[in-house]
Length: 368
Image (cartoon, rainbow, N blue to C red; front, side, top):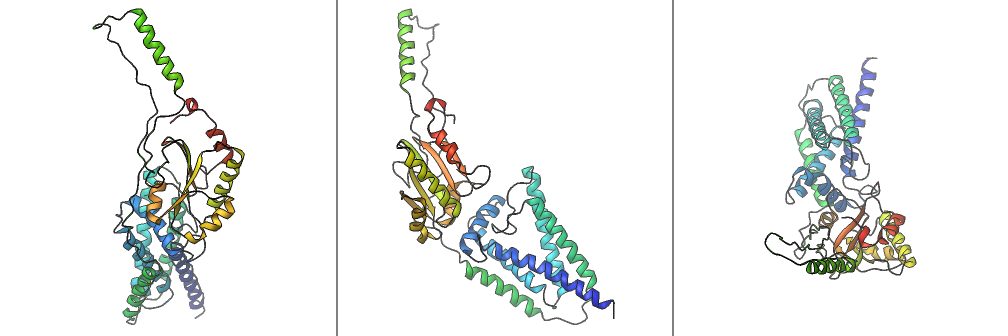
């Protein structure tokens, strides 16, 4: 009897720890800063950053993400009840964790490193693939030990409890973050590749045509004159003209912001300060994500100025921002050519000092 009590406490401790991991993991995928703060935004971000790179289609990813999160939440809750705990719940949980471990190991092997957020806890708790693998291995170990500690099922459990909890959690996820139809009037514009501007060289086939020295001198003088006149790049299509008609003319600062993002607000404020000091500052335009769009007036109030902007839906926004990129995003465009791109809040984050130096460079010093 004395030995049964410690085993019971250990078993309950293990159940609670693993259950909390699964419940927090599910809820974190529905949050951006606070639990359940913005489910659709968070789950869409999870789809774009985690599922799309795995090959999931845009049509299937919204269903898979919600079902997966529902299963995670259901397993977390079912670990705290007794029906078929040892027979079904623990083995299924171990199997799911093993799939996660295999996937993360494969991703880490392909990437050749341990960078980025695995998405286990969404954007709420960033975790590298290696950290996630270790976490899942530890969880599998605890479940295996729990399997040993628990007595074999002697009575038939109530299977309806399992199915009810599972379907209820999946339905709840679909209700918290309903799948939204794609915007019918929206097309994602992918920036076209641009090349470094070059001057068309005139070639002379001396084996076929005899040209006098005077003619050659005139040609060389003409080419030198043309070269001296070029002080800006040739025009190219950036791919953003559908948002701002004059984006490919002159020097522009194109920003990708989320209205409620503190880092985005700070970047906008820094841009305003730079613009106030430099009358020739590249014109600022903003593409906002349609997430908390009602905060845009407050966004501009904090930034200290208002700028032309467009609002696009969550998933299209991530596509326009670019694969592997994060907000805030700030691009320097000159006649549609992209010369600088800041994004995220880590090593590539917006640097106002660096940007000020960069935009002051003449065309001859810019490299594509």
